Amino acid sequence: MGATRVTTLPSPFPRVDDVRLSLDPERIRCARETAGLSKVQLAERLGVTSRTVANYEENGAPSSQSALLADELGVVPSFFTVLPDAPLIEDLTESQVWFRSLRKSTVRQRRSAVGHGRNALLFFHWIERHFRLPDCLLPIGGDMGWTPREAADALRGDWGYGENPLPAMTELAEAHGVRLFSLPPVGKEVDAFSFMFDGVPYVAVDTAKTAERARFDIAHEIGHLLLHVDSMSEDANSRDVEAEAHEFAANLLMPERRVKAVVPCHAGVADILKGKRYFKVSAMAMARRAHELGRLSDWEYRRTCSALTAKGYRAAEPGGIARERSEVFSFVERTNRSKRVFPGTISEETGLTVRELHDLSFGTILAVSDGNGGLQGNARTQERPQLTLHVNTRFNE
Image (cartoon, rainbow, N blue to C red):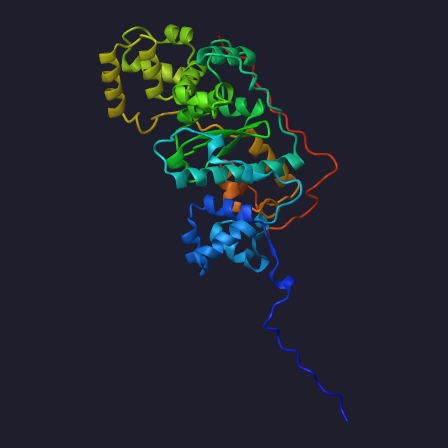
């Protein structure tokens, strides 16, 4: 008589192991905000109720949902698993960020921008596990009591450029410990922004702008970092922090005495364009600075702005400078390529898609051929590559 075959049917009552909540709730919320979705919108995409999504963000989600959530929220499944040494990205909130265009953006757009800032924290965390980046050398904190002009003059003196035009702002900022990253498409609405996280300064750059305007934005955000590190306190309400950051940037890029030496009184459009090229700023910024320093009367300033607008300088910079490159991301890309570390590896280890890595790295990361998207060769060596960014202190008088 043969042995009896027993067929085991699936239990209608799943075991606890099958429904364990292994996806981090804060990471789910962060990914949703970055994607610019409400809880209701995400619920519709997932085919669940909004209460279910709320529960995901309060208590976590089943691991079986990781692929679907990742697909709908534009991340990879590993994003929802928090590693022990990972930065607490959920600690970065909208109230800690200085936005360049606060009034023109919606709450959802700002939350999405902050979400991309959180993604930048993950990306830089990966970079710093493999590379040594410069320490922050900006005089941040300590309440120096500077005016915007005093802060700009102090920084110029520290950098050793006197009143001469500054070279690449991207390289200068990175060399002094500022973590620069490019803003994904949401940047059109929120513009540039900056924040401090664990004592490290970060600046998001809108690459949809001209190179000249991006330079001014970086200077503007450095102004926030120097002048307003405590500006989220109550006394900030009595100050126009945006005007102060603008004044700082104008003095940093276009110091008064040198502007007066380059731009004559009653300057014409040709004089403004000459000054623009000399200081590597936008034509409109140069005109405004000339007006602020008495080189143009009110009427002359309005006439000059009208003439510049007619020539296309309000929306663009005809014949402008080349876009500045990030030395950090360029170095990381070259080193990764030589060691055959592909974007797919970075994507898996950060939880960010290759597209997001591309958008955050000034378009650099996709310059690496990813082959099969996997790791070939040894990506982690005993000694991390040394990244050294040099500040060019040789300049022409």
